[in-house]
Image (cartoon, one colour):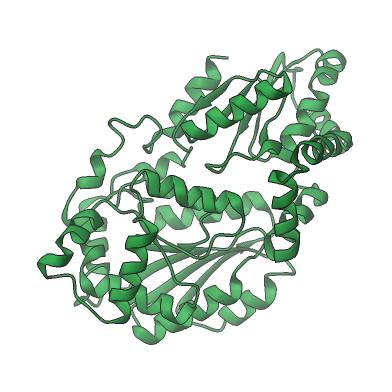
Length: 402
């Protein structure tokens, strides 16, 4: 509701996502020898342009029949969070309303600019990230309450598949079946990787006409050529909209209304659907394209540390087995099949044609079928408090405790 019209934040996100030079420069400033000075300047810049956020809050208050006594603002982007922190005291004085600011860090990563002095609460998905933020805040002489929770996933995605839906998913993973294989492809706000996704879809379709793709993308100038090409294909369903809120709703409806078995995505916040087991509504098996930026590399490290994806060494071994058309039936690979029952995703090769061959091998050689043959991953999280599908309920209970 707040900040979605802030073009400066959108521009920074897009430029650092699609341009390797600017992305490398941004990361160097974040963590290089000038990091302390740069982060101080960047935070000051973010906190200087607050007129838009101030006016949006005033308009929201005006819509109420009675002025609110207390407002809780949830920020999932550091740019918005710093602006809110800068005007929080002013809003409380002018509007006589108590403002609470909760910052949700949407990647398993430590980046200094995400530390928001003035927030009432920060929520992160990783204990190591919490420790890093705590130490950084201490170096600034600041103190913000930081808690670790499972990443907040839409509660509906944690619904168990009914018997008919589960049977449909089993057939999608069965190499001998004629069932359509439903593959979701969410396109990032910066439209990163559209050429890769297009080539991958075509290569998979050449492997089998069973593949059908559900593409969710913002209708924007930088996505229109991509969407126009897909519009001519009867094996692609396009879900697009102009506003961010409509896109979120379209993606939610797609996952709830379809039995989706696979998803091709960057390892952005989508990576946390690995917290859902394969037998749940949102329990798609995630196929990760190359990471873009430190936060996406850190997300993959988080998934690997929690055994949600294979290690890089095992993943590379799988690529090699796929290229050699090897099957996983012999004793030498029994350990891989055993671990595959718990994997919730894998990395894809950088070449889309190789990636298509790898996905087809996963379907035909056994690893994907193992996901539904056992319920091993349903028990995950019993001893890991930050792993599980109930992050939303736990998040709002924590907010209520404020």
